[in-house]
Amino acid sequence: MPVLVMKFGGTSVATLDRIKRAAKKVGVEVAKGYDVIVIVSAMSGKTNELVGWVNETSPLFDAREYDAVVSSGENVTAGLMALTLQEMDVPARSWQGWQVPLLTTSAHSSARIEEIQTDNINAKFGEGMRVAVVAGFQGLSPEGRITTLGRGGSDTTAVAFAAAFEAERCDIYTDVDGVYTTDPRICEKARKLDKIAFEEMLELASLGAKVLQTRSVELAMKYKVRLRVLSSFEEQSDEAGTLVCDEEEIMEQNAVAGVAYSRDEAKVTLISVADRPGIAAAIFGPLADAGVNVDMIVQNISEDGRTDMTFSCPIDQVARAEKAMNAAKAADSINFHDLVADTDVCKVSIVGIGMRSHAGVAAKMFDCLSREGINLKVIGTSEIKVSVLIDRKYMELAVQALHDAFELEKTA
Ligand code: ASP
Ligand code: MG
Image (cartoon, rainbow, N blue to C red; front, side):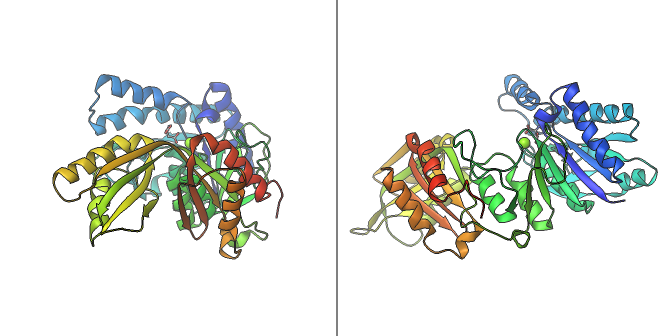
């Protein structure tokens, strides 16, 4: 029988009533003839509570025990979902990650999936089981310990199962009814997209849109898993939500598909570093080693053999970046006059595969922001996105102005 993967996020399984509502949706698909793999998150708020308990017990915790604790939220919802389905006379059972087994690397708290063995679940489907309820977010390390996949990891579990079982589709049920042109809380003209290309979704997710874990989109793109984002609070229909799919499936394309933002950015400038071969490696090597996620980089024109080097990173990594740079300076591997951190910035980005074929998209963005009197501090581009770093107080204004300028409220 064809397989469908249905993933329910924390708000969709937050109470017994909601689990019932979700189970009914599963029942509808079973009645259509699908064997269903249900991936569940922990009840909303549960994982945060578990993380809090770990931190309170042991600030410098053993990551293996962290995973043992924080993976438990999903075990509860998996069992409850299986019981709810059984009450509806749907043959179902729960599976924890190690039982599948879903094998991962041993990078505790951010493990990567290596393999999903399909034999056990397929054997049960063969015996008449119609729904395998799998605890999301967790797996088994080569050492035989429980691992977790990083916050939001159930999305990745779901896509990986869809790929492994060659599912017809992977439906991600959440508390919003799809992917929007931008955050509707910031811009009331935001429009729900019917379809979005993998590449665009990947950029939007990594640039700050929170609907899907970035890695789940990477996986979906790699294995061409048709991914649908939809609300568990609305009536079921085959057209509901947003389909994340191959760009070939999207006929009409605006130059820009969406506007993303990330509020908590910082801009760090090393003033007057020697401009010589190897200087970028001497700066960004230690930053990478210190776990600083550097995003945009600008090197100024140099004067008298010295230059300023500017980069952006998440605001909560500035202290780490400063420490790493001061250590490198003390070790004489770099030399700079001053380090200046601007922590009042945010990043606003436009994303669209249509940019490849439309000229002047960046110019239009800059013109739009200049009309609002917004100064651009750093600019970064890729083939399908343009990002700018601006003062945080202009974030909402910039998002709204760009949404208007590119007429994102209109379909192509
Ligand atoms: N419960 C985990 C978290 O909150 C995983 C997930 O829900 O995707 O991060
Ligand atoms: Mg999530």
